[in-house]
Length: 399
Ligand SMILES: [Zn+2]
Image (tube, rainbow, N blue to C red):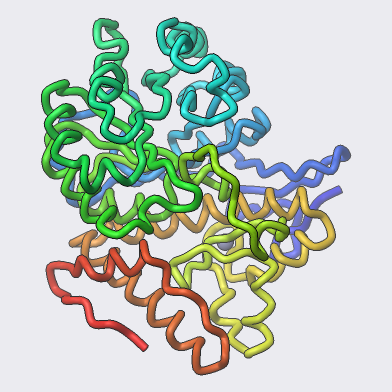
């Protein structure tokens, strides 16, 4: 059974990909080999040291339940990808070029706590999988715990393979703890990958965006990578972070914390969230129909290579009748629209300007909806990017 592409053909010869709904009701997304590679190289090359194993740019961070076929096709299309945990390690062994995030900072993975950190289990797993770059197995680094930070920065510093030190930290380290973070990373002299731990989005915390950019600038030329991020990774790379790995679903867009989610509508709303390019933000598909009701179909249009001008409503419709496949389609859209965004911003003459313009356009769209009685929040992370301004713009509140 073929899930039809928007143009009505199961196989699109022009775009070189096809969707397939297999007998097991698993939505698969396969790229045919001739599809050109989508390496995203910023026009303005960042003045960092090279990081062996990955290029500078924006890449996908997938879930551990992805199929091997899909993972292979994603790596072929997007050049690099990360998968987390033990399941990820098994997958990566079958998909050359894929990186593994040990993700020991995930609460349920820390049953053995510190003892895990003293064994080289994850080093062996990554070597066995033949990864191009080894990521360290850092547990959560508590606020104010300099010795835990130092221990993380010294992890596997004597091995010969290219290694990226994973730093799972709360936003505190980008604010009050920033001077210590900068000092310790400079002293270690190693490339680092920041996982911002938060229930939802660590960059919503006041000062976190500015702190992140200050950190990346202060430790330059050491490469700074954002791991398990959302589209703010595009902004960070525009401001010369080395690379960002953007989660393809809400679960992989932030570092989880051992806390209950707040009670509320979202608790029971199982629909996937999708990147809405017109708003430069994520919205749950259950909420998309409101834009159709107020005749703002323009907000729902997506021009990436998965949607190709179609409406995001089709993801909402599929999610209502078939949640599993709806979620998968949402993930594929999120990959493609993030790539489209990154390509546009990072190829601009001044990527910082292009990112600011994108955030501003999103904020203006959100403000314009209020006139139709739809009030969406301007999230604090987005407001922080606006307030930073750009080489050509000061921030002026909209709406
Ligand atoms: Zn799309």
